[in-house]
Length: 241
Image 1 (cartoon, rainbow, N blue to C red):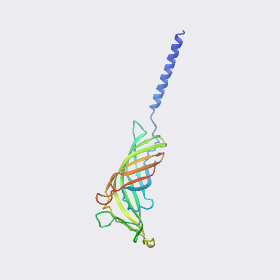
Image 2 (image 1 turned 90 degrees about the vertical axis):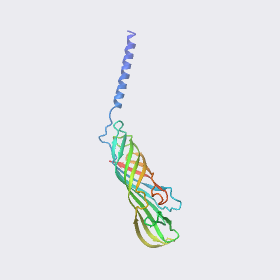
Image 3 (image 1 turned 180 degrees about the vertical axis):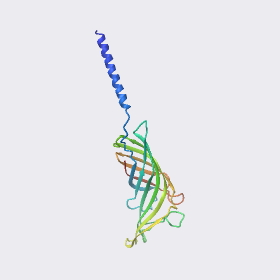
Image 4 (image 1 turned 60 degrees about the horizontal axis):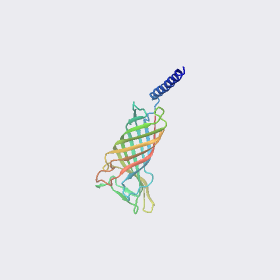
């Protein structure tokens, strides 16, 4: 009897450990319910934009910005619902602000001219705006894929084609700042710009709000048409639904 009791105790203890391990394995294998999953179809981005490689002579002024809107299709991995791939169409716009600078978007020259006019009559503010039709692709991670809450990260690329490029000039004034004519002049031309672009992107945040960054790999202007500048942007992204 003394030998049987310890043996029985060992068997019961081993059985309980085995049963506990079995329950843990079964719990781990329970699929995540994605029926109410937030797919983050819509994504809106707003941020600060500038150029790398811009000459020191460029008179940037004010808050240059980027505004983007995308509709994304999101496909979670069957083997790991925390991971997914997303892609879809969208529109991306950049608005670069200059002060006391003539931006010759329609000049009949071989290169894109950015001329400092601070010592003569000039437009007080000039905005150079570009708009692209884009197709972003993202590799995403969501800590809580069933609710859409918690940590979210994404890396990806965007391929875009130029739809529009124009300048908007406001307030014709003297070198001393006296207003000569308070009017707005708009000019549009895509002649100096590369028609296609490639951009790398990244996002990190909590829930529907995140920080994003983007960097254009391809040059903004055609070879030989001006300085080799590449736009970049840092800002906030809102995603959901």
